[in-house]
Structure formats: structure tokens, C-alpha cells
Length: 241
Image 1 (cartoon, rainbow, N blue to C red):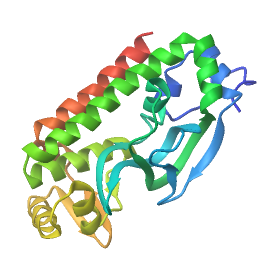
Image 2: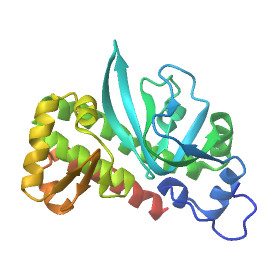
Image 3: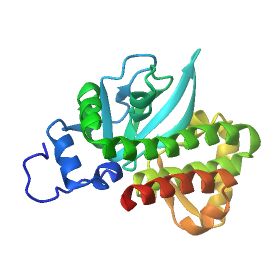
């Protein structure tokens, strides 16, 4: 798709955008544009990873699903690549990856990406740096769930999802937030009312508008800063190559 351009093609995925032109061209031959539709399952639990998805727009929710229950461990936007962690560590996914907000991606067959990485080691380096941030994100989310109160966790989720989507408008419901955070709906509603009274957000039907992102960030727990710094550090290292 990108291999025959004489100029650097425009890509919105942070990992791809950080690659040198020769490395990007090597991948471009195998990249296929994909529309991400809401609730589309990108990768299924415990099934072989057939493709790696470099997200261009929209947000993917990574979830642990067991016995009819679900808990989100991370969100992936245009900073990330769904399936990259499983490509490098070589085991079946323990998460289900579902489109939360619709968008688009560039996908590549796993075997082709593995072959290109062997020929272009910098691609592996950039993916490895992203994976370090992603693993930190997932692990910190687990710690956050047992250590921090509802309002802190909710504010952190809103800020992380704004980062992933690069937007201050999030089409989510109270029920969804309660489900992915493992919280009571009444607790989520109470926290959102408090945020709205402070002028941090506005609620309309099925949509949250973030009106004061800076002050909302002050409501987060330390986990938000740790996770956000992990992604920022990985991106700085990519661009330093």
C-alpha cells in the first residue's frame, strides 16, 4: 500500500510515523486499510493472532472476559498496535480486543510482519518500545482497580481514553463505564454528577464532553501519570532513532 511512494506517506499511527522511510516502505507492501466498526471483534480470546492492527483512528478496548463478566485492562488508539505484544512474546491472546469507538486501521498479516522485522530490526525496536508502555498500562490498570477510589479511576479512564482517541468528546454511557471499570452504576453516576458540577464535563445523551481537561486530570490517581508517561517515553525513544 505504501511501498511505491517517492515521498513519506501520511500515516496517523504513531508507531508507523516514527519509522524511517525505508522501514515504512518495507511494511507498506503488506499493509491493508481496514474500517473499524463499533463492537467489531478485532482479536478473540485464546485464538491465533492472524493480523497486527496499527490503529489510525478510533479506539480499541482490551478486555478480560470470564464466566459472563468483563473487565477492561487497556484502551488502544493511534499510538498503538493491537496484537503486537502477542507477536513478540509468542503466546495466544489472553484478552479480547473489541472496537469501542469506530475508526480505521492498517493491518498486516503476522507472518509478513515477523519476516519484515527480521530484515529491518528498527521496526522490532519501535514495536518493543510501544509494547513496554502497553504492558505497563495493563499492569497499572490492575493495580488501580484494587487501590483507588471510583472517582479517581473514572477520571483516569476518561483522560486515558481522550489520549487514545485524541478527542474531548467520548460517546459512552454510564452503564458502559460501570461495566468496564467493574463499578456500581450508581457510583459512576454520582462521580459524573460531581465532575459536571465542578465544570469538568458535560453529559448529553450517550456522550460525555470534556470541558476542562487540565482540571479533570487533577482528579485522577497516580496511575494516569504513570501510564501516560510510559507512552510519552516510548514515543520519544522512537523518534530519537
